[in-house]
Structure formats: structure tokens, C-alpha cells
Image 1 (cartoon, one colour):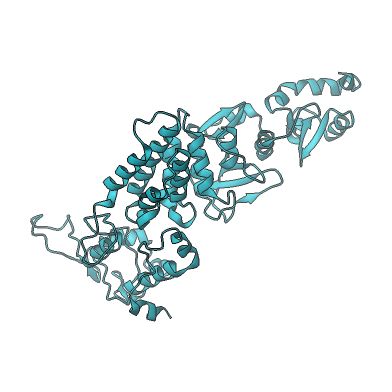
Image 2 (cartoon, rainbow, N blue to C red):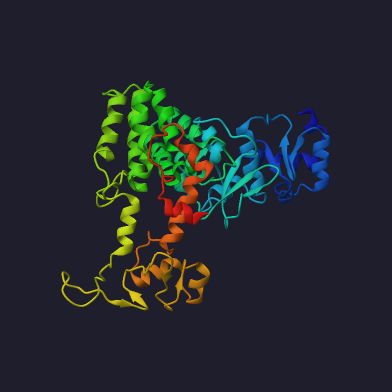
Length: 440
């Protein structure tokens, strides 16, 4: 109070007028907000010289008697610095959030994990750029979808993403900018959420990231391995026959893998929380037996697991490429509908001779139908497939290009490292000699 009493009367009144604003912003205030209340830059300098304010960022000050340490204080500073001309009441009452605390910062606020190294992360709705944008106070994570208050909780006046929404943002960090060991980080979150009421949404978000990204960035086998060891399952033989063995992630579609991971995580977390009615090891064995151990691909000499119509993913894709899909809109009986022409090809058929494919629009043959070529017909790849009845999952590339890409992925050191724990498991590197000769 001595410092305030030493101020000129008019400046003391201005300082008192901003009391509610500073209280709503954890003692923070921006130069723009000060000017909106009639506090000029010279007045701000007097307040700083009087020891009432301390500059903490470019254009942002904090009350001198307020503590400003810790990840929560850093997140508060980042949120205030992001939009400097509006009050918290105006920002929180807007139809949509302008920016929300996300990523490792949000998970630390919820008490689920440690905060990541570096600046706090804020989610904003802007066109995606490579690597995001970083300021002196914030790392912005761009989202293509519009932010919604449904995914936000208010923690002491600070808008923070729910754990599930923050996990989804981390899952999009496919270059490891925020967390080096993303699988280990997710495993720690799952264990910490064993007793939380929102455990199901957290488990679903982790399973979705693991099923979508597969071992490239977030190896879901590592997540399950660490969680089950925390649950008391330390039998390496059991883990090798279920979680590690058989490249089980490649047996299923993403939706089915999501269901398997979510169920397996729920079983282990019940054991950690002391609510399991059965041994987690036995439950894990039954889960994997029920979801694929009993079904192999029906193609002779194929050791991969069936994911669609009793075929593995590679042979199911080959079957869709070779067959002619019937157009349900064609005239005639549904049981005797003949295939019809679609441009320069047949409806639903990718004309692939092994080395080239034909364009339905112009009839020319290419090794792959690129975006540049499809733009000459004023079409995107999705619109091209819809127009000619080709399933969206089928790539517009020839068999030669597709197999060459599989060979490059399978023989890369990064992919081979994934199989170091189970060297006897089948892998894509076991390719026929003709393909290996053609790649050199």
C-alpha cells in the first residue's frame, strides 16, 4: 500500500480501476488493456518504477507480489499473451474459443503426466503449417477443425482441453517435437487415469492414436507392455505370444485395432485399480485369441492374419483390385447386373497390368495417377474414385509401385528395428527374389 499511496492521485485511481482485470488474469495485464483503461505508456513506466509491476513478456506485465513460477503460471502467461486486447470475460463468453491450453501442458494441468520441456502449448484454429509456430511465450499447435467449448474445461479461469482432446493433439505430433517417447508418455497417462471417472475417454483417445499411427511414431505394443507390467504381468513368454508376437498390429483394420487396444488397456487398468475379477494375463490371452489368433489368411502359403473376408490386408486389397465391382444403379436384376463402361474403363475396376494403370478419363496409361494429372481433368483423387466406382482404400498406383514401396519400408532400418524383440515373426522384408532384383 505504501507504493500505491506514493502514486499521483489520478494514476492511483487508474490503478484501482484495473484491479478486477488483474485479478481475473492472475495478476497479469497487457499494455493494450492498460491503454483501454486510460493508463498510458508513461503511466505504465511509473508503475514499474514504483515496484508495482514486473515485465514478464513483450507487452505483458505481472503484479510484483504475484508468484510467476511453474508450468501453470507459464500456461496462464501464454493464454494472456495470445490475445492482448480482450478481457478474460469477453474471451470465455465467445461462441468459440480463440485458443486453448493443450498437449503436455493440458495433461500436466489435469495431473496425468509431467509437463513437456519447453514452452506451453496452445491450440488455435489456423491453416496448418509445418512444425507450428513458436513465440517467446507459447508454442502454437494448429488445428484444422474449429475449436469447441465441448472439449474444454475451465481450470481457475484458464481454458484447458480435456485429457482426451489433449491426447488427440499429441497424436498428431508425428515428428516428435513435443515428446520424444510418445508411447511411454501415453503409458504413464493410462496408469495415472486408472481411478479417474473419465478413464474410458482417455483410454479411447490413446487407443485411437496407437491404432492410427501404428509403430511408426507411437508403438502401441510398448504402451500395452508397460501398462501390463505395471499391472503385475511380467511374464515375457506371455507378452511375447500376445502383445509382441506375430505383428498383431498388421492383422487388423484401424477400427478393429482400436477396439483391441482399448479393451486390453481397460483390462490392465482394472487390475491396477484393484477392480479386476480375473487375472489380467489370462484375460489378455483370451482377448488376442478371440481377435485373430484362430484365423489365418485363406490364401495358400500365406502366414498373415485375416482381417477382411478371411484374407489378410494385402490379399484383400489384391482381390478388390482384380474384381469388377457391380454398379448398383445399373439397369437389370440385382443378381444379374452386368458390369458397365465408365469412361475409358470398367465401373469399379482399376485397370492395372502390373506396370501401369489406365486413366478412366483420358485412357492414357501411367505408373500412378498423380494429383497433377487428375487436376487436368478438374478432379481430386476422391472425386475420381467416386465417379468411376473405385473404393477409396485402393491407391491409384500400379502393382509395381505399390510393391516397391512396401519393399522400401520393410528394408529400412527404422522398420527393421520394430522386430528386434521377435526375430522369428513374419515381416515384409521376406519378399520374393524378383522384387528384390527389381529394386536394385
